[in-house]
Image 1: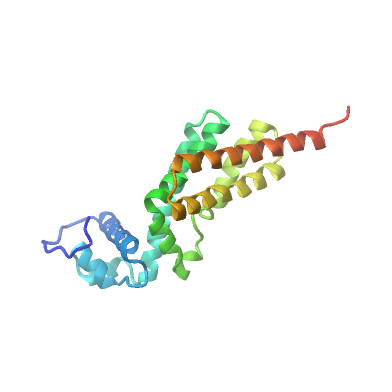
Image 2 (image 1 turned 180 degrees about the vertical axis):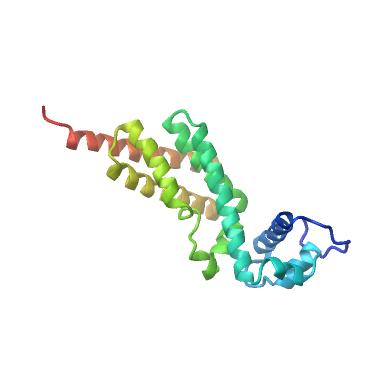
Length: 209
């Protein structure tokens, strides 16, 4: 879609489709121009609709940006959960989640980082924070069963490891380097840390008899 003004008859759309359209054009404007210059007038012009129609769905720019951020994070997390569900090994689990994260940053990094520059959006947290408790619980349960670790060890291990893909994504976005290389390094670091935790736990807490 182009952010150019489009002169065409207004299409009748369902509320859901109209919201999606407005968010799509907002995403394109934020990615190309940033948040500071964004306005309801620009969004309406890009979408070929009146600013009053935009306001009827989003009473303020803040609510619009928050809705866009929520949609982006929900989409990313859903893809990561799907990757986790397909995994048959720990390597596949870690690689699937990491791959989805880095692919998202490669394709949508400019958008999310610009959204995160807006204080009213940043308070909701970035990709690492969104739905964190649910994600940690899901993966920690899996890790606990796989390695016979207690929850008080598995949960912090998972939550801390969530920071590695975020760091890798920022490195990828800043350095514009090979994504596969960064993915391989990140996966090796996560699996290595989990293996070390398991070995350390076994040594320290293995009964003497």
